[in-house]
Image 1 (cartoon, helix red, strand yellow):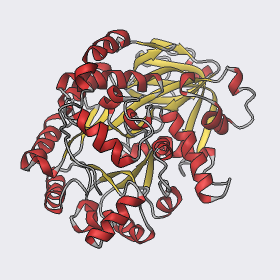
Image 2: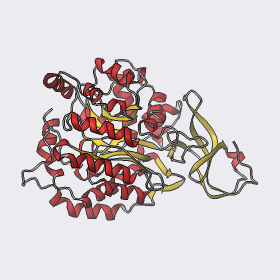
Image 3: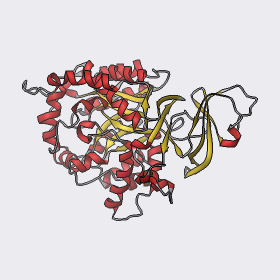
Length: 454
């Protein structure tokens, strides 16, 4: 559809750019010298620059030399944990949790969570991320930040069984209260932490409540091979089998990491009743020296979408989904022993439509096409590290960087223009967070919110 000049003015036209598009088979393509027409937060048309030249618009962006991509989606993170970036370095997983992260998290206040989330959102907007799936504590504060800064998010209040019934109750209450908030930009999930910290009774109850209220579930499971082996040794079942017997696999499920998924788990995931997706965050797996990575090809073969993620910055040191896209391609090539896996176009598919489906936005995000939300990023490919361009998909995945994102748009609203953030004052947020750090990082009290011992 191409609007005519006689139509009423549109809100935004992005012109003279190359647009990443999907065909009816979801194959990646690129429309050159194109224009994107936005009205009411929705893409009204993807047309040619010439056809859009005479349209009246409240705002125009001349995007010559730039590529328009669907906004990236961080499918699993703990945004407020940017406050702990670099605090627990070069440690095995168990020490990372028990000696540093969980003791420090016992100090968290809602103010810490809000400041951390605000800084994280600034980082993500600058990296072309328009939506993130967050799984943390004091999530009312994160919801406020999302509403203020203009991003989109799937939010869940995390809980452990050690908190008693109040943990699950808070997760449900948060999800119901915030569902559809921020003009619909906030969706919600129930967020049990993991099968090793949430018992079967609470997982079963979570699955029942998810079905009753039409909510998805977002949790960690089979994060690494050690967890799977420990579960088999202690309980005779894998973490994925725990999710099956408790009914979690029969909800709409976003499963974080899954590097411990084994072959016997695949039929269970394939038969799952709901929408099942896995979020992969390869940088963290490399940093923790885990021997395996998310089995992307095996999951794809059974119809499970794999979205891209960063995990929290306390483990990953970064919320750069652009880096996750490149690393996913490279790590899968290494894991498969085959340079043909995963191709640049496949990586872009994971970054766009598969990531959108993973967070429950498969019908509204992940693509630039009429009827989809206008979540768009503009990437400048005029730098020396991106020239010349022989294969645009490869250039985007393996040569471009998050710093090449010039403009970030959510629901047709410009959140960053020409690298200038418009909705978050980073120096002010950083100053306030740094004032909180001495109290936040104190571990002399000897407390921890939980114990890791899978």
